[in-house]
View: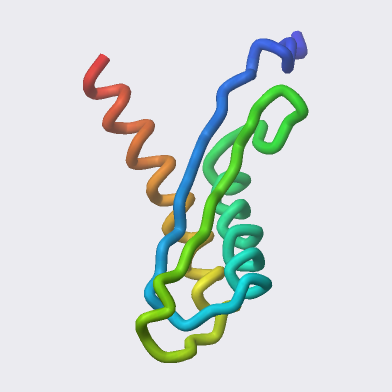
Length: 93
């Protein structure tokens, strides 16, 4: 039996914050890459029925760091955070 995808209408929000010196385009790319963490941890992810989104921001208070490195780490940490939150939620219920 195929589940009704309309019943999977949950939304997951995330924030990636860094102090690296980044411009707007680099910060956007980090948010896009961090979305991969949702796809690694949530099934199905990015459906038309949910509002999954990652926000990214930078204080620009430190040196320039490769945004692709930050985005790769952000994707890994996003997946870890989603799984950790699900485990904690299950323990509380």
